[in-house]
Image 1 (cartoon, rainbow, N blue to C red):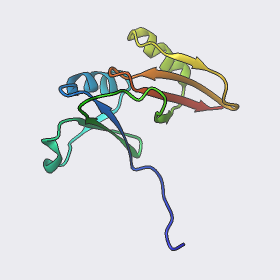
Image 2 (image 1 turned 180 degrees about the vertical axis):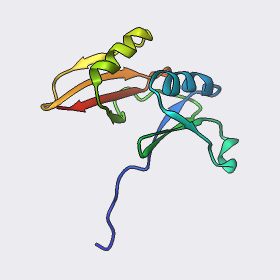
Image 3 (image 1 turned 90 degrees about the vertical axis):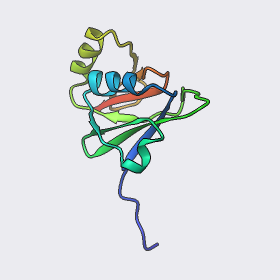
Image 4 (image 1 turned 60 degrees about the horizontal axis):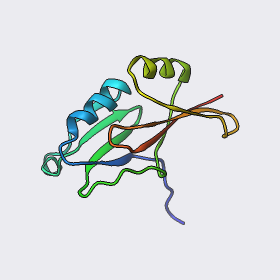
Length: 122
């Protein structure tokens, strides 16, 4: 082959129409991602984009909306212990999971019911 995949540019999660403010509150306010501007031609579709590390998360509007309860992105973090404390302080529920060898991980749901994994390799 004369090509090679280099990494993940962005992950997209779906959300219901009119959910941009809830997305901002959660992904920027709770998880600390930075909102970035969508290209002008894509703004009319709604949604909101975020940057974290060298990747992006795109929240796209989907009607009818059905949350992803099994399929999910997995975000790597440093100091998951501190994130757990932060989530508790912000009344954000999470589920502990110790079934992946070598990883400390939790699952959370975004405001729309999409599943998100957050893990720290130890």
